[in-house]
Length: 502
Ligand SMILES: C[S@@+](CC[C@H](N)C(=O)[O-])C[C@H]1O[C@@H](n2cnc3c(N)ncnc32)[C@H](O)[C@@H]1O
Image 1 (spheres, helix red, strand yellow):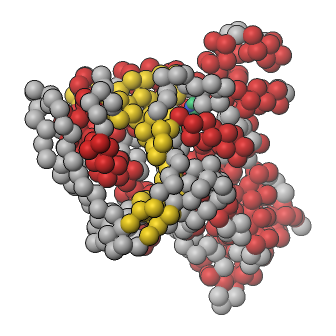
Image 2 (cartoon, helix red, strand yellow):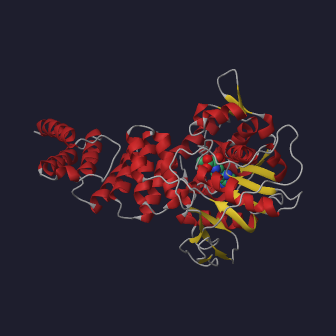
Image 3 (tube, protein in one colour):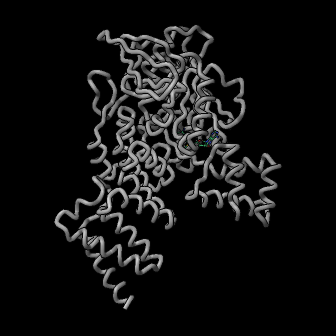
């Protein structure tokens, strides 16, 4: 199949980019649709795709990655429910709801999480002050969002008590979101690559645009970010995930550090004083900049006006937080070692939560991305793992671990040529990395390239024979790469290949 014209159309119309290693996913999607439509040649299908908008969307629905879950990166929700909303509720007039958009909302977990967070903090009375829209290009995902029925994986980071409170069990063991939450969230189909966004999407106060841009190339990221910035009200906020923050700090919106969390804010020409009286300035949108730090009192105000008669508006309360609180900022802090320990004891979801919090505070902490990528590889979320690795390499192009992990991902996808390239990149950075040589040897052995495999196994044995050989791998790893075991495997394979070659 000539995949190039398909790649071109999909990228042009949706932004989704299928670089070499992901071409297989695109090809699978095309084949699935061709068989559904009983089409024999890719040329016939390409022509159909060009003229038939419905077919185009059916294909796109197969190509999107819809990975999401409730309370993903909860620090953004905490900030919204606490400080941001408190300020707005105090100044907004009745009939002027606070407008929240989840751009790339997938199956709805994100907008419903926002609603639940606000209900938890303010009670049912908040419903009159909020409007939440979830938008996505994938109509299948939107149908599922509207249905609001979820299986266990969506609740992986969500407190059981809240599931009981806001969901009802279905007969097949899943959970349906309660109507009073569901009806507060509107869903709409939206192609973020579209020339013009619907008028309904104007004057937005907060945009969540998280874990969507990772599928786009830099110029697409920039163009969509520009358009989303155009939807914001003055001083509105835009959240991307911690791993996406730096790639959007190109000056279109100023990057602000608010209570230790990084986010973008529109047209802030403000001078703020924190409690201690230090002056801080937000920067003009011009060029990538260090984040402006704004700290200050967060007065939490309850909304005025009619309350939902069924449920009184309770006092705002802090959500239960497993991580220790930072005394100055009141935000969660988590250390890398904590995250590593959790991952090493296979508490992956908890560890991912810790890392996301950590990266929100320190978005240039390369090892945070690397650990996250390792966990995602373990959980077989390879697309996400790859994006996170790329992020780490963007921060540190000489990251040995980043290149090794990309090699492991390619290997797991059976993309041996790409894996070889990655491991060679790693060895260019550190030629004494025995793990890189070991992976190369294994790939060559599987491909029947005995001579190459022999050479690489030999190098591993030599490196491990040196006293400090065990130190020539990555600085940390979740994977049990015992130098002893690997040395035995290499010696065994080396002898076997040697016998074969004579
Ligand atoms: C990984 S999900 C992210 C879900 C959620 N925001 C989160 O952080 O959990 C990415 C979503 O972006 C959507 N998406 C990809 N390209 C898009 C486009 N051009 N316009 C709108 N949505 C798009 C996909 O359909 C998918 O549902």
